[in-house]
Image 1 (cartoon, rainbow, N blue to C red):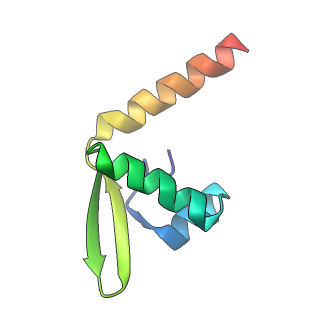
Image 2 (cartoon, rainbow, N blue to C red):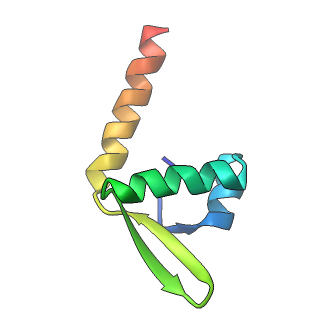
Length: 70
């Protein structure tokens, strides 16, 4: 969900999502390994973006469903 708005660096994701750097890196690694993320390298910074906009929509739907089930 943190990447739904626009591409972000790991630092931005840590700040926006409130997770530890190790947790963010693990999530990004898994999402990239299954082909959901694109990366752009600019010097030492890597920017992550969603490869498919539908992925954000699906995530939002699942979040909404989860909240309804509680």
